[in-house]
Length: 307
Length: 293
Image (cartoon, rainbow over all chains, first blue to last red):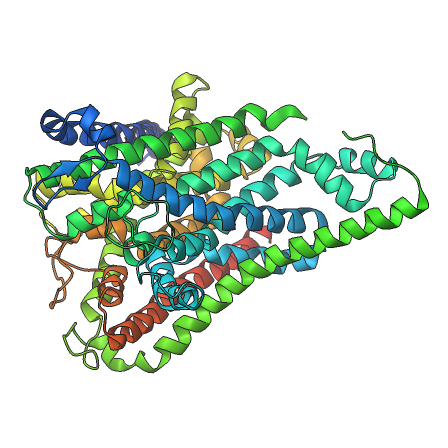
């Protein structure tokens, strides 16, 4: 037996195997990356294709101008306004909590907190982002609503205010961590220059660091609010199931997401107009959140490397 | 910037005072966030602790709150997690490897990158609608665990890709250069130099993405519809329910006992999430030490 030859053979075989393995891996990872494009395409195609049936029966003009949403009770009416109003009412209430709190948490962590405290506080606040949304729904319904009822005795159990406040707490970590990233990205030389001019820490934070990070902060708000618009279980549990064109926060309303869940739970017959309507609501929800996310990411990318 | 920085002693004390008021305001913000978290946890624990019994874990759902449990939902959650991990981990890591190591720098690549971060922001209920029409009706998987897992895989795929990319990006260039210098080809370099170093970060990403999936109820509501399941799923084609849906079902009932039951279920769900996150931290620390040796 020729030892040298067999070593040579096995080496060549090994090299060939490695080459084939490399080719297969190359193909596999490329396919994986293109799957993400496929998913986006599938989402859009699915929403469009399923809602075409709906829009042949309900005109786009009726969809946007009618003021009553009554998909099951006769006379049926498919005016999206009450669902959009409900969604924005909850989102606006949430932003009253999440924007000031998220901003002040971020400024405190980035500009004031000593390093050790920051390392303790940051993970604790981020726990808020990891709590499932049904838990927030439970919290809104069993804790915040009874508390609010002391202030507003006439308030309905399911209401926009309670859901909105809890949603605000829920998106604090999204707003604060993106804002903090933007503040930290401001170079220290700007802070030093400001101190050298005799500015206090507050003046440095508000008049130098925050304006320098403004684009990132705005992006954080936009992305946080987009998150609130797409949030589902919390509003399904706590905000009610009454599509109503109102801006009264202590009334029961219904958001776009909650409507989709309500219909999906009822096992609406595949092909009926109620079933198709969830895709029509879905496509509007997708368009709103998609444009807000694109805007947010665009602001981050466009302004990131200013320094 | 403003021009009102006056070096006047009286003015300085006023400016410092404003600064202190602002700091108090910031601390109030931190306090609001902390109070939100603390009151949520206290509410859940106070309402739910007496409901956390072996009945709650090992029993089937029931009309009688004292006998009701979430055994089918617990098994359903674990089953779906397993399938989701099998589907999404290879694809997610593969896509991350492609984007970081293989992809040419052109507009298609940057389009895929932008698309991935946009996908991460698509509302979860939209994934539910996608799963409902594609997996449940079009591919005729019915309302099965497989349909649920596929839907959940699509939902957490962008999160996993983003986390894995961060981990791969953090591997120093010198590791790759050294491996190339030893004669490795592209895949050998990735397999033997990049992935072992990136492994702890990827693992953390996997666990965090899966824990997002555990708590996600909205898309599963669209997929399962039925919330009253009284059997444990065996094959991937069985109907199923998951813990957040069972909790949602209990919360939606007006009786106080079911609310208590929901709180008990939440304690178990949070415990599961907490242990997953702790495992992620422990594993990361362990592997990080080893790679430093």
